Amino acid sequence: MADDRFLGTGAKFPLQVDPATGRIMTVSGNRTVKESIYLILMTQVTERLVRPEFGSDIMSYAFMDTSTTMLSILRRDLTQTLLQQEPRISDLSIETEYRADQGAVIVQIDYLVSATNTRDNLVFPFYLDRGGYSEEESEIEPLERKYYDDSTGMEDDEDWN
Image: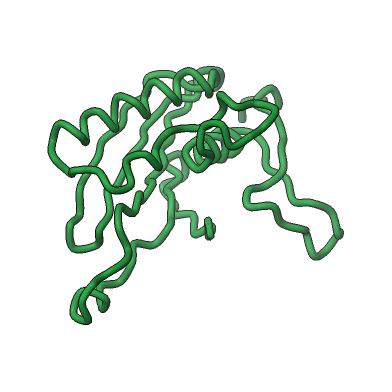
């Protein structure tokens, strides 16, 4: 197994306390890269006072037109943002799929962790509008917030709420 200590160790997101030790749970290796990408997507630009340039403008697309052009602009903006703010990744590929029945755009992010030459991905459900549905539409199950770890082929059921 490759030594991936240089990828860093950081607090687990969302912040959790280990019940066995009482300490804040941490993650390391390739997992820090995945959580960093998620933090970039979930942080609005200017939200952090010390680093106002950190984050993405994904929320500005919340009520967007779901045309092919707008989805292409979303992909381009996310690609530029992630490549600028996460220097540990390269060979980034982002695909989007609009799901009208769930009111969401599924953002599939495939990337290469440069230092370890490891491919990984993150599936990010971006909900466009969750209000004002009729009774029959409200019975639709929301997308589960899961991401997949390609390196093991196993599904990781971490809850991102």
